[in-house]
Structure formats: C-alpha cells, structure tokens
Amino acid sequence: MKVLPHPATAARGFSLIEISLVIALLLALGTLAGLTITSVRNWQRGKDAALSLRAVYSAQRGYMADHPTANIALVSTVQLQAYLPEGWSAMPVFTGLENEALTLDHTVMPPKLYANGAIYDPSGKADDGLWDTGN
Image (cartoon, rainbow, N blue to C red):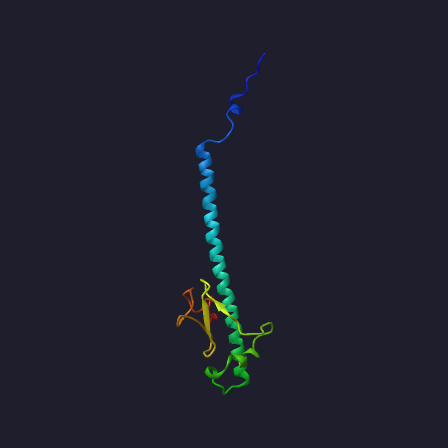
C-alpha cells in the first residue's frame, strides 16, 4: 500500500509574493539603518566640536583670569595652548559635516567656528551644545 503525503506538507516553499515582501522589508530596514547611522555620526561630530570649543573657551577664561587687563582679541593661540585643559596639548582642528576645514576664531569669547566667512553651526541653535559652546 502506497502512503500519500499530507496535503499541508506537499506544498513546501515560498511564493513570489512572500519572497518579494521579505526583500522589500530588508531593503527598508537597511535604508532606515543607513539614515540613522548618518544622523548619529553627524550628532557625534557636533558634540566633539562642542567639546573642543569648550576646551578653547576654558583656556580663554584661564588666560583672562591670569591676565585680567589683556584684550582677548590680541591673545595668540600659542599663549592659549598653555591654558588648555588637561589632556589637550595643542589647539583643536575642526572639520565640518562635509569634511570641510573650519576656522576657529579664538579672538572672541566664547570662541566660534567659521566656514567661508560665516559662523558654522549646522544645528541652527547657538545654545544647544552642538557646534558651539552651548552658552
């Protein structure tokens, strides 16, 4: 006597619609992960820049505490380097979100970053702690 397979086990495999849905879901998740990673990377760059700006601001305040009659606009980076917080041996170098070189203006308090002659702050807020000292 020949035993026939059960009808539910006879049809194994996936339909084209099921495979297409799984592929679409994987593509959507991959795209979402890519966008999330990019925004986290940009946020981290902004926080790193703010930390560096705070180090320069701390050096400015330390210098001005030792030289209260000095004009901050005339203080050089070499003079400020001695007042950088512990762990900082040189003035920080900044790059923007598109890897463009940013210019540090240490002659104003708090210090500012410039790109192409304009203040650089892609976060849009001067007090959020991203790309600024967070004042």
